[in-house]
Amino acid sequence: MDFDLGWILLGLPVAFVLGWLASRLDLRQLRIENRRAPKAYFKGLNYLLNEQQDQAIDAFIEAVQKDPDTTELHFALGNLFRRRGEYQRAVRVHEHLLSRADLSAADRHRAQHDLALDFLKAGLLDRAEDALRKLEGTRYEAQALLALLAIYERSRDWPQATEIAQKLQDYGEGSFSGRMAHYLCEQAAARNAAGDSEGAAQLLARAITTAPQAPRPRIDRALMQLKADRPAEALHTLLELASVAPQAVPLIASALAQTGTAAGQAQQALAALQASYDSFASLDVLDAIVALEGAQGDRREQARQRYLQHLEREQSLVATARWLAGEKLEHEQFHPQVQRAIEHATRPLTRYRCAACGFEAKQHFWQCPGCQAWDSYPPRRVEEL
Ligand SMILES: [Zn+2]
Image (spheres, rainbow, N blue to C red):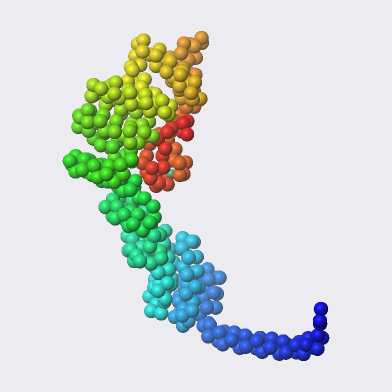
């Protein structure tokens, strides 16, 4: 390796001078900035440290008016206030940012988005709605649409929710047809409650077209038909459901048994239930089969036999309890206590559980009351999960 000491001897002083010049320049730059940085900063900082936040904001706002390069500071401040739950202050900071004429478009959108978050977190939904609507066409549009959807769902404004869901779908955020079918079902339920069964039926028909595989529209339609004392039509609807959404049969098993009996077509209902049970051994379906076969008198033994067969397929505590209910135990005087204890132990197993958040409920929900997710409850009991 050829190493020339002379170059280093010459290079060192040059590098030193260059470095010294650079540091002088930096220092001068810093001094200029220091002179420019208004006292308001330090005043604001001082107020902030003394927990006098209102005065601190005033000082920072004063600072920002004198120096347009402080937007980052304001965003940081606004987010800090929001995270601490001080929404009014966060709103003030973001509104001030928005009122500035020299703000770039990107920063304006960001401030608008942050302002919407402030209102959302503060629970001021109508103001949040306005702020979110203004984000259309910006890079926050998809986020804003999702937030708007949550607002309209919470306020049960189904037509608006439908409009937003449609936009999200067009935007490429996945399929919202299942949700839109739920919105139609909700509107149908409201019409029904108001006595407009014709309007409700039309909405349900639209829901079925919107999401042909969704179980709810047909279930709601069947319940309407049953209420209107048209069991044959209700049975037809439920059988149709069993073929398009077989996984939902456990949810309608008992309704299927009832309509079958009411329509005088118990055999048809029984066949559908049996077919479902053969592909998935649901206890709800088994209960419906037992109910259809009649669990009275000598049929009672047959029903118990069915639960026993079920136990061979599934390790089910609930089925055990059903079977035990008719069992003649040796110490018969203790039977009721034993039965009660088992029933108590099995009760949690017969609940439905939200797959998204784990919320458990005795009844099946289309929208989870815990986490607001749609269709998050599998149509199976906890024991069958
Ligand atoms: Zn949930």
